[in-house]
Length: 203
Image (cartoon, rainbow, N blue to C red; front, side, top):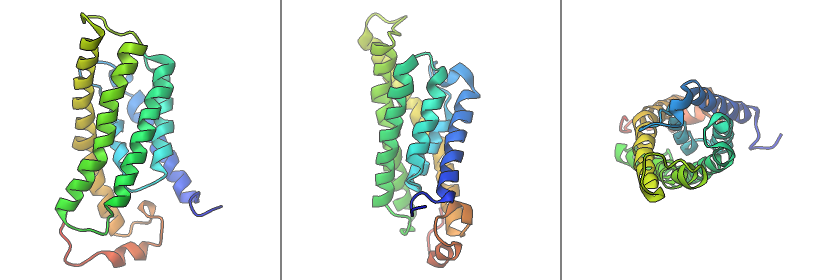
């Protein structure tokens, strides 16, 4: 088995995908429709700041979750493609803003920029699937008004889950990695513990 496809990474990807499906499908249709989509699984998108395997895991999890979506094939493949691209860009931010920096402001920038992609890409593209592909414009005079409404709705929903719920998740994973908890690491646990600076700013 090569360096990337380790047993731990494969298991971690499976857990992330399963959690995404469970946290989406368990809430039924309110995960897909409504003024605010109830989709706490989106908080998992910030895991891409730490783990490359989160990229395919989030993609597969989103694809499986969208099987029961009202918007059909377009959401199954189109919606999951948005998640895939957003996760890859979030991972890129994680590589640029590495964990070795300990200041609270640095982590704010890391989360803020990393979460920007799943928020904006979903808000910009998913309404196209809902309105122009799915044809869901009931209650609106034009498709443009329907798109604008869904854009604002998704912008708020995604921000809520990515930043409101995702930030505590990010802080938890960061602390577990600094403590050297093996399940959150890829290398040896001692390595993370040894790298923890005694004067670091707590977050």
